[in-house]
Structures are given as C-alpha cells and as structure tokens.
Image (tube, rainbow, N blue to C red; front, side):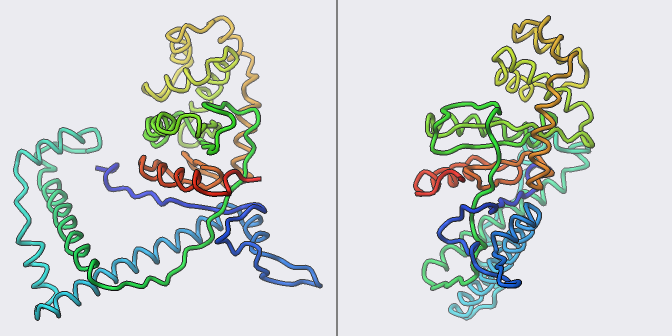
Length: 341
C-alpha cells in the first residue's frame, strides 16, 4: 500500500539570476559596507536544501490552512441548518457510505499484492478500513465543494517565489527536439524504484507534447542504497558509444535491475549491440568520468535524491503523476520565460 499512501512534495526552486515576475529574489536583505546581499545571493549560497525547506514549510502551512478552511465551511453550513458539525457530517457523509464488500477487499489485495507484507486474511481489516476511509474522504470533499460554491473564501497565504535552477546539459543524452521550448532534465538512478515508476510518465509526456518538449538524462547512482547501480550507468554510456543509449535506458527500466556484469552483457546482446566493443568499453572504465561529472553537478546543486527532475529549471521532487507534468509544462509553454539563462 506504500505507493498509494506516500505523498511526494512538488518543489519549485530558484537559483541564479533569472527569476520569474512574481519573484522577490532581487530584494535586498542586508547591506554590508555599502555592498548589498539579495535573496538571490541567499538562494545561491543555500542551494537546494534551503529552498526545499522554505517550500516544504509553505506546503505544510497551506495543508493546515486548507484543513482549517474546511472545518470553517462545515461549521458555517451546520449553523445555517441549525445542526452541529458532527450531525451535518453524519447526514451528508456517513449516511451515504456503503459498506466495503469482501470482494472489494479481495480485488484490492490482488491488484496491490506486491506492495504488501502479509496475507490477505491478515490484511483484510486494514484494507477494509482504508477503502472505507477513502469513501468517507471523497464524500466529505463533495460536501465541502458544494459549500465552497456559495461561500466567499479569501486565501492570503502567499507562496514563495517560483524560479529556476540552472544545470549544464551539454554532452548529456538528449531525447527529442534539441530546440524544444520545454526541456526536462532528469537526475536518475537506474536502480531507484521511483525512477522506474516515473519512466512511463516521462515517455507519455514526450508523446503528448512531441517537438515542444525534450528530455535530458543525468546520471546520479545512489551507491549507498544501490551498490551495483553505477555499473548499470556505465553500461548505458557504453551503449551510447554505439548510439544506443536510450534503447539501453529503456531496457534497464523495463526489466528487473541488473545485479551482475553478466546481466549487463545479456542486455547488450538482447539489443543487438556490438558486444565486443561493449565489453571493451566496460573493461576500460572510460564511462566513469561521465558519471562522476553528473554526480558532481548534482552535489553542486544540493540534489541528494532521485528522481530529481527540472522542467525548464523548475524542480519536481520525486515520482509525480502525469497531471503534475502537464500542468507545469502548460504553464511553461504559456510563459514568456522559458529557459534559464
């Protein structure tokens, strides 16, 4: 159930001189001997971690504010009907929830069995509770949405600046139109389960937007968590020497992760690569420099996780759904500011 319950924060960060119109990055924060220190300077010095903390703090505030708004709305509606909030929820939410059937529990277990540790009989009650909670939340949201339609709401909490994080892309594998209006840069680990999870989403994005979007791959093997990952990245660069990087990339994410050199060679054979040249490349270790360059670039920006995805410099943290990519890309295509300078 992990994939259903984890929530990934979408983090839009700003580093560098190019800022959006809404940004306060040029605001002066201090003057030292006549020399100014701006928000841009603080962002550059603090890097990813500082901006991530700022954005996450805003998101927590917003989630708490939204919860309080919902409570107020339910209270207002209950007063209008001369009811308590609890009575209103019983009437409009709890009374409308149907019982979760044994078949629904069984179907859910079968569909998500790989995410569970335990048998169906052991997990029957937790699954039943989870499915019922989902129904309650959906029905409660319908009630809140109906009340919102006739209630004026003025939200005054302001989001932090939205801007762009610059990274070098020259020399990195690129998929799609090099001159596309929107460039997606992915720092990825071939052994990362969330990178594998976002892989089909990125393919779908390229399919939807065609020549308006391209994808750039950056190597970030997290060896502490995935010891053999770097070898897979080096193998992908050896495939790149034969102009087959993206085929090897797709094959790696479409199969169980490689844990031996024999698997890497077998993939090369399956893709009809020149296996003599491929093995020579692996044995030489000449791909190591490319991998290390990308790792150093990630360290410079404070990126310590995968997938870390930049959409025209706007950072998306973790494996996000297609809707997130569509929303950000559509904003970029409509924006006069597209690529970070």
